[in-house]
Image (cartoon, rainbow, N blue to C red):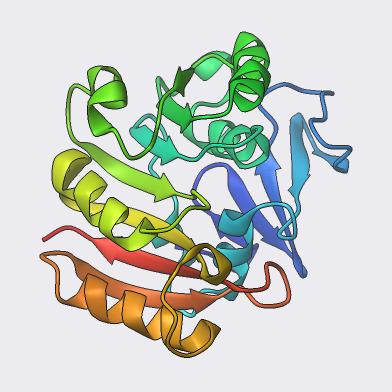
Length: 233
């Protein structure tokens, strides 16, 4: 639980209005972020305007530690992108030289993103880039042989909610946490505006076998986005 110093888990810290992660590769920046020293520990700024997970950690009204995986565990990230959020997850989940023994299965359909993730994994042990279509679970299932305690889905395509339910039913461990970053513009529902789309998504998740814990509005950091926090029973 976040304490008075702003600590959120082992490798994530809130300081003032900003977020920082404990840099696993000292002296190295990924996206020109700021670095600061605290004794022998180096912290790397985590920009909530460049990471929807960071935005959710700032905006959640619950314990933020519930939104991040435990160090040393396995995380599944579907729609991993170029690696900004992956790198901050790695700081916390794996640590320097992956001394925690964590693993991030990073799935993306874009060859360019996978090239960036492969380059990132060369410096950060524990990241497993997988080129696969998020809708075709069998393509990345061999890289997830056991159910995992933490999943994040961030794919900008129609049918995100039903896809998330399928992914959770197949890969999320009992009592595990899953985060769905939903972009309203990606959905094809025609009735109503963004709010109607988010409400329909919430109703669909609530009617599934999953437990919806929180709906986090990311407006101001990522417009037209909501992060849904889901738990498996």
